[in-house]
Length: 319
Image (cartoon, rainbow, N blue to C red):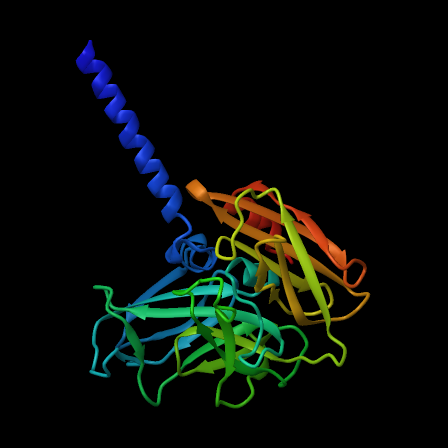
């Protein structure tokens, strides 16, 4: 009997210590909402093909069309490669998915971009070794278009997600590519307009253009309902209702529990969605989406509630 009590007491202590350890580590650098969004939340579509043959007019999940000429890939060190290419692609063609994948549309100088769509492309061999596009080659992606002809540029994402610390206020931004404007074409076979992108780099790619506002308006948001909040486990996004932009409120005041951004290039009196995504202890997700009027109040109070990834994904799909 004494042995059983001692054994039970020991198990309780071990379980308690393990639980505390998990809680302490849950907000570590690699468990931030940025890492969760970009690496765990969405599984990328995978396409495999022989490097010697390439692929022609392969339609992706979100109706983008990809073309890759033969022998377009080499090893990461530049050496020749033959065999099967495994291509992973994420299509963020709506603003809600840009927020859910933690992809604010902001240039490296802080100015905003109007984004027609964002893609993520990664290539490996069957053993998981990284590949890159061979010099002089490119991948052609035809992204379903709207009505903006030949004014968009190609931008590459500068991703610092491996350091999602509160002090790092530029975790993700975009740099303009040296290539020309993206071609805007009408495909007679599919009877659709497309933005034809020819990229020489992999990673995050944005099709868009610069935006400006002479009188930017700031915004402050206080999040309620999540419980334990930090700058790494909670993300707050602003999506203007009249623009194809996504802003993240990077500044976090832990004493006031406020997220803010001084110049998000929002127009006073316009409407915008506030999106809250929190990833907390024990893999629990909190979410909120609310339409507000910019400048109507100095501080917006948003209540987040427990949710699941499928529900959030469906709610943001048409945003």
